[in-house]
Image (cartoon, rainbow, N blue to C red; front, side, top):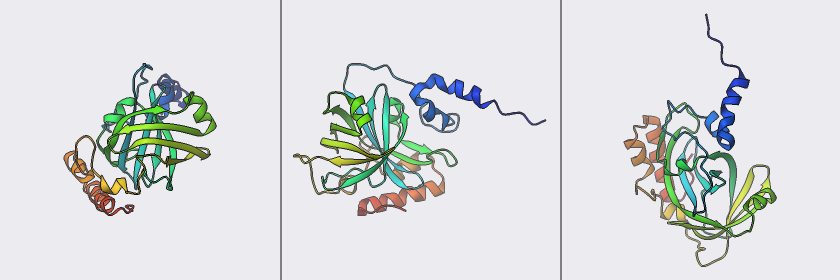
Length: 225
């Protein structure tokens, strides 16, 4: 006899204990993926973290995350951050991630949500340039400063429609016309390329080929297909 799936209500009730990380946990099978299980972190009076993860999933993109209220608010930036104030980079808001995800560098197996190679492209701390972050997010206009290895200075996230934002660099001494994703393509923590990460993590042949292709296109300053 075929076993019945557990009722959806029971599944939802189980996920409710994860609060803002319920969607993150719902999308992942932690007995398959090496990604960290999501747990809320208590809010402490210390420097806030940010991370940018270079991710070759169905396509190459950059996941921009900033710590707020015990989770990492997350946006997928298809073309990656730009130091040029004239460049307005599309940033699609995704599910909140656990702070532990900031250290994740490896391969999400084929068949899993977000399958592909993940690199910690940049990391550091951030500070709001507004009095109330929650209010700024609700308004859709969050100004902040980054203190990373590759990204520094003043930035803004502007919402243009539900879940769709623009990531824009402010004009300040750290602004530049340099394509930072092409000039500094490797990991900020391991100095590895996507292909090196994929190879060491036992990626499939398809995933390794995709990572190698992304490395070539990144170095040329072109988007990988």
